[in-house]
Length: 109
Image (tube, rainbow, N blue to C red):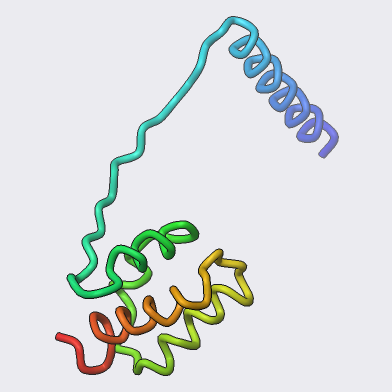
């Protein structure tokens, strides 16, 4: 057991030394993630919904939801503001709720 702990400590210290050497030598490692484009359905309020909702999460969170009633969409938008702190003005929450219920609500296509 002690040998395993010593091996683990040696591995960790070696990794830390390698990281330090890479940063001091100016080596930078970067990755590029693919761009994911989610196109929301057209309708009044689409731009505001896209802009405000994308501040906190991907727009596919909208497109993959079941067809909620307008009241439920309103509760979800209110939760985003009150619980998660989404910076959406009250007047805009009503417009976003109307858009979500029309485009992704119970009776949407």
